[in-house]
Image (cartoon, rainbow, N blue to C red):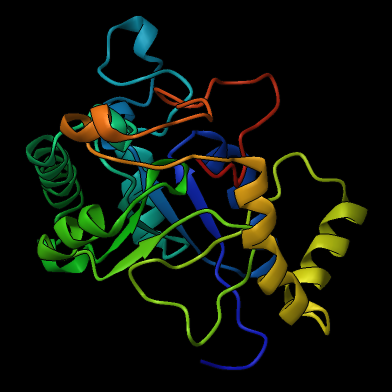
Length: 235
């Protein structure tokens, strides 16, 4: 991997990726990965409120094919229904991931072996869920953690950082902490801070939740849409 490398990713498949992010990517000649919650993707370029399938505010498959053919974005899975693991059994997770793959292959005309990347909803996964995904061909699996990618990072648990609503100043500070001369201290300290902020938090399949203590709130469904564009929002 070349020095000073970075990867831009977008989660869910909001239409703002096409309307807002694409012009910025073009201006810098950057490309990106976009992870799609395939159930929400529209089958028409018009709002689903007028009768098309999918959710308003999300990309259409037509827009996705255009972005892919132009080379600005590569599209991969963010699961099908964007449900937390605590809502799913093992079989339900397997079916959800397989359905996501089916939609991607059918709509984009690429073989299943092309779709090797998976971003977990809210970055939440565990060893068994990652093994299930790997058996379906997802070689690269992404979480959400405020830390950069290290050469020692496992490919089935690749950390990503997000900058939701950050000012330019805060973005620079956080980026320097994670990648600059203080990065070793940040990578050592952030997991400890995360444990303190989320005491007792753990993830399990639905048929195992009776033995799991969860003191942090479990989020369900897709992130709520806001008035501001959802550009680069990790979820």
